[in-house]
Image (cartoon, rainbow, N blue to C red; front, side, top):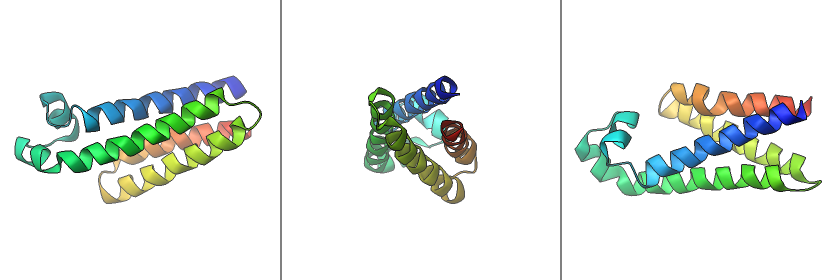
Length: 117
């Protein structure tokens, strides 16, 4: 179960690296606009906010990677950062778009449950 949990944690970290790239670097590109359903005008107006959000997603990814690489304290590091991902996913799901619940919060919840088994 430990290996499966770590694989899911790694996938979640990779997702957040992807979010970082999309939000910080690709926000105003056709891919970024298509991914988030943005008009060119809205993408331009919100680019700085998106970059800030992308940076936070990068911190979540860094924390999860730290948890995967850490020694005996890795369990608590992973629990903390998975909980942060769940809270961010819940907030985003209820305030921005329901699909964030499935894309962000649910995988982190599954990983958190598997970590405790």
